[in-house]
Length: 399
Image (cartoon, rainbow, N blue to C red; front, side):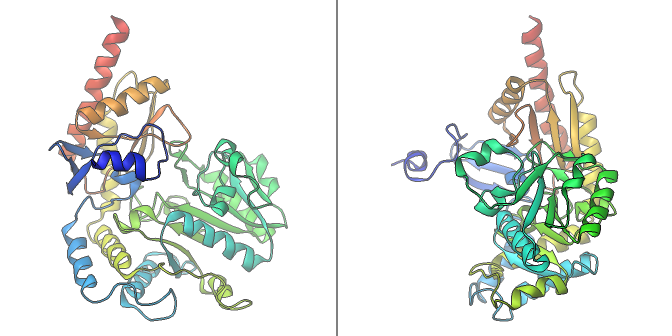
């Protein structure tokens, strides 16, 4: 039986029409399929492969750790150097109020933990999120998603969760003394990297302080240098009470974290004890990969290079059929006039050896989130494929 047949019949599906290319190997910023085709990766597994594929530094450290130990005990019981090294590096890279990390396995788990933490610390239950937001697919994270179409068939979800308009100052009055937390993405990922306005975030932070509500930043896609800062909140001058990260922090290995102060995080230790537990969270292999990823980003100033590469993308991707390019650094969305054109670009780019992808909540934009190690020549090469396809599409319209 072919792998493609097993994939369709014995592996749970999420979409009726997956691209279904069969990958057999990868290297740096390229993927290779079973037929020997080579694909330039402009998606990085949806903001995951920060340092590209099969990064030598990560592979070497992971192999070394595998020979020492992998899983030895449930989270939080034994002292394990891969966890402590990563926790210290994160603490050194963040403000003093974000000094304590809880390691989990994914972004949605970090959101679940953050919601629990906020409710436990404040003693309140109301959670406010924003329309067109995405925070994960498990019951708690789905409850704070800001798109009813994705939620309706799974109700009832967690009660007392409210979604309000993004960037609307008037709606911030919904934050009141009953609110445990407000959760927001500095750049709304699923809607095509829509930016939270600085003034809006300033008023939001003040409103949270007035009502003793915690502010949670979801940086699951924007962490580890992708937006031009190590963490996207650094663009805003707003420090969240809880920071959620995942995806790119492992550069291909499954890991996430929610980060807060020792004071806030300490509530999980009592009344009840073991207030939040995980078996595989903080897996030593993933922690080693995450440490090496962040260390490489910091030592090679990849966050600064992301801004330079953003400029190159915008210079290369100039065409009358492109409405705008949103986002920051290497977290970009190309906006088109219609769904048909976006679909044409994604599907035909794949045929030309370039991987692009869609967004969950907008069908007229195309995602560009390559590895931070993408080279200038690779940016030019992939952009040329897109421009040529746009020229072909335009010629058909005019003929």
